[in-house]
Image: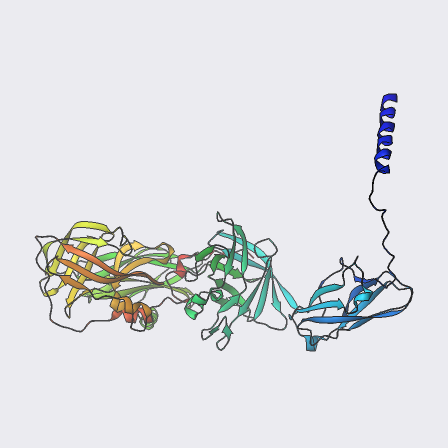
Length: 578
């Protein structure tokens, strides 16, 4: 202990010796400020949510020197402040170190949901202090009033495949506006707006009934891209600002009191720094069930299973039907063509087949039905009211003894089942010719076990319309192939890219102009080749005739609609407890 004390004292002595030689000037204390030293409290509230029943709110202002009564001039700037009563000075009484800057407002002139930004700055610099801030920015808003409706149920059928419960409110000033608080459990807030014909939403003039707009849903989900995923309305993107993209965001049904019962949304699932997944044409991916609504399962699904010839000569179409849990009555029909009006009339006729359970069924097409496209439809009912209609299509070719094999060919897929850079070849396929119509040809066992039909018309090769490839595109349903000139119209921008189908006698190559599509739209278009083997007979050039244009009718009349789209019905309707 003595050694430590000695050493410590020695250090002090050395330090004293060094200090004696230090030429550093002596520290001079700053002069004590004599001004008022006004400043804004940095810890005070700067964001104000105002009450519609109050008339003013206040910001705190401070000073250090309190001897005298003074008035401090302020410079005021900002946005949306023209209807606020904002003072341009603040007064301190003698001895007072705090004062309020009181801002007056009136809900009638200021308005709801209009954010004001106000910046205060001390106008007389010689009153300020270097130890405090002389400028402060605040925001203020009067939120519109909302009435809580209760707990809604959110059914998310893409990422989660799960249900969520959240508070839903209706705006007291706008009955078409609703907000959901905490939709996925993480504090987000989403506003939904019911749209009406005549409204403009995200640059689109609305003509359809029951459409719905909405702000972004934060899905509270990070993918392997390490970016937050949002459910975004299609109209957020200029390329999707049209009613075709808006139509799957709609009020599915209403309650007796006029409020929505179920709202169905089909968003773009988007990561703003990365990209996303376009589900705007799928339907029923994100559904909001309002409080007190019990969701019943009236879903329907239908698929074509094949054709059957009865001993009596009656041709029957086979269908597989799936009905929802709450369906006690449904009707089945098969009709020629693709007209919604014809389907609706057939469902109301006595010829419709009434069923009450899921299963396999046969529908009579009659004796010697005409070649062409047919529609299969199933409708579910609650009493006499139609709940849901689902349609799908098939092409009928009558069995003919006139087909004769004239050789073999290879089909080269380059649009959908292959690529232009790496086409896929199906070799050794039977090439048949209709002996009663020498312009008609059939290639057997291509695509997924189906046949491909084409004709020579007007000196061109023309593929038959609406041919089933035997494959499906996920939830979008069957993939069809057709002549591209029948699918697109001259008004479509794709039309200018099309090249007529040809036959090259030297290379024995049939080039077809094709489009692959599902009910919702096309997947790919361009040309694909069929190369005839050397032993195959040459393709005949038929006399000129009028080209049919059934796909224009299909595109216009059978465009996927919310009421009967095949795609929408791929998603079940779960029954929810109260």
